[in-house]
Length: 251
Image (cartoon, rainbow, N blue to C red):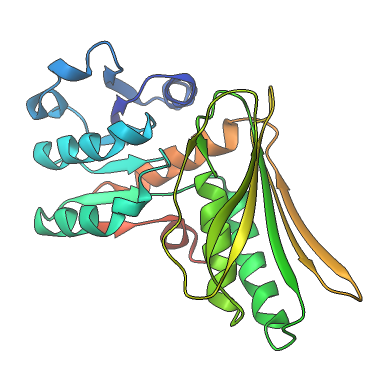
């Protein structure tokens, strides 16, 4: 598989190492230094593009891949409010986009468990839901895309909730705070914590006066994210449309 890396930071380099070890070829590396000079024809040799950059660059990189006719896997978060419009462009171009707030297989099973738990608790509307996510200091957006997906997944299964809100940020570095869409009902509150050397931890709780139920996912390294992104890239080649991890994992 020939890969164009759109974003060549820590995740891009991690993906590169795993791809090369698997016998894949990196045909293009794009970062802030050369992005302005990259044109669609520069992606011509790639079978697929993998995008881990910054929220403000993600949509432009998707459009670049669409213009090149190259399927693209996107792991950047913080841009998903634009997903409906981007999806329409992908369909109009008969292109292929695979997006995920988190490419870890374990996290996506965590989403499925959270959804089922919320469904089972829904008839008992006394449970208060909350989410806390913790990431490394280099993550500049809050809340995490994973936390947003988790909140939306749970809220969709609970009559008492709709949407999400960023209730608190605990960080020593400035964060780009993502604004939640307006919600007519109670949003799921998310607390974002930024600490040194934390790949990613997500904690979901359902709390009532009689008991508390907790689900937690803790990433030990970035390897799960990189492996999932490469699996998505292999799966995406030859397809058209907009996909995410439930399509890959049959969840």
